[in-house]
Image (tube, rainbow, N blue to C red; front, side, top):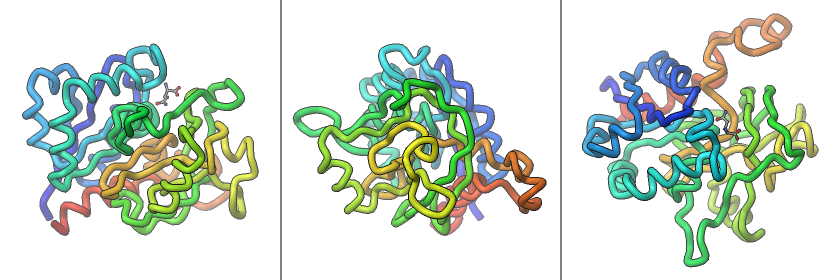
Length: 258
Ligand SMILES: NC(=O)CC[C@H](N)C(=O)O
């Protein structure tokens, strides 16, 4: 099997890059962590990689809005290189602050003439939410979520409230199969807070782009790669691996087939 090369793109304030790198390594990828300034100086670096991850953290101190400055870097200095990356059948994963950055950079949904179609705003309760959540997946053609129905992973964010500019935007995303992760309750839909930790419309926790090769999600799959990371692992029984690892394996296996 060909070993894909994964790039974890750091910025000042990224703090989940180590975990994201570890997850991709465990899944069998060869990983490098590189600062966005280095890629800005030489966008051809991207050619070495098949997978790009924008990890979680507090890039640029969450100034203006979380992920906004990182998004501007991607939009203004790397737009062509990233478009080419995606169009070359490669994979992009944005986790938490990375989701905020790639959404605000227009990599998940291109803006229309009035601007971005959706954003991630402050959590409805105005508080940073740091705890485990349950997710329901409807993978459709999303490469990362192939074979995933449910996922137990933590959230840790203050700005995870997915808001479409108009109601039809979220409906349209749903109809096109792009809403691939939703916050859930123990036996089905989330019943408001705390199951939906941030007030996201339609309980949206993650969306894919139209190709299924770009995924943005607020919860952290890289924080559940070992089974013992789950707070109830002794009561629920020791699993073979953490549930989040499957997403990274799916990405690596995508290149084994191609
Ligand atoms: N864990 C993260 O990536 C946090 C993202 C961002 N700083 C927020 O609080 O919303």
